Image (cartoon, rainbow, N blue to C red; front, side, top):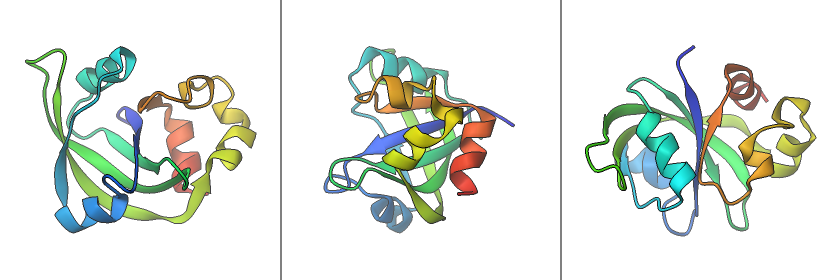
Length: 128
């Protein structure tokens, strides 16, 4: 499987429903250096999980990377395309309880907005 990532978004700012309506968007405006590094490393075809933060705190849907322009190293432009909603949203509590995520930056660095996932982690979220 190609690389996978989890992208966090505040649903009041831009929700998974907004992504589905728009069909595609540029994922930018990320300032955390570790998150920016993860964006720069993305490749077209990478699988994505969209996670709504704030009051929701659920993995809610899938998306994929269409293109990456990392020429501006501080603000890479990653175009993503909407996928499908997850069959059932996966809560942060469920993620933290899953041993697959014990060492994940998703659990260890709660404020990180772009998190790499292993293939097993991606599948666990999609198949929950």
